[in-house]
Length: 80
Length: 249
Image (cartoon, rainbow over all chains, first blue to last red; front, top):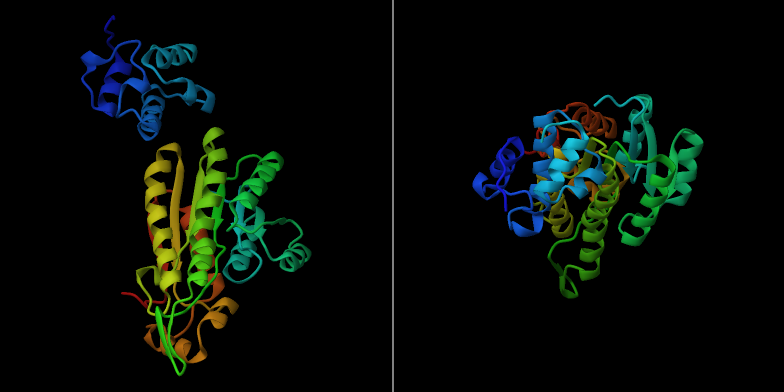
């Protein structure tokens, strides 16, 4: 499992209160107790503010893992 | 929020406070829809305010709310503002001492008031906010509470329901505001409406007016003005605006 660095990891670490070192590409919502629907919305708002984007509801629903978050951000032209 | 062109739903907008809100919203060029169970009242409202979209719906019935909200969304898309105003004002002490003996608060009326004044707010908000979230529509939910939320003798059910409304206001503000949806409440004191006169005896009302520093009842237009203020102020959130003439200080 490859560890990744960057803004998304820092943001996830901050919102979910887990060490950045534990955030991997395949870390998913189902793996983290703290990553419930309320935290998910907090995460979405933080991503929108950090990257200056607006996410559609379909994108929000799809972003349930670190990999998916990065894929959506990449599609929107952000570095992720 | 600027009201012009915004889609606003008012529950219980046929008479009293709701009607005053409808008139002010229309004067501010909002696109108003009224959910109300009073069919004759809806007809009369439509005659007087032709631009209003009228929906026959008992907002204390979850199935009716769900169906009416779906129909609204098909026709208009997500609403920008929901005003949860519908409800019933009901007074009865927990224990009545009568010539015939001791009588407990009517349990059926307890359920009816909780359903009309609290469950209706939950049903409407869930159905309307769901569409706002899925379309990323920013907006405002205004819950009409009451100063009775603090506990008014003789109003067990009504006070409990309105305290619940205040709690939902705080909960939803925390849950929904990150998505751009503010949730606020307006709590009128005793107001000059038919429902007040129907639920509160003339003697009790006279005594209440004596306790209001302004020595009068509020006017529906003054409450409606408060509702427009909290919609307009984008930093007012999760709080209850009390409009009671200074009754509770």
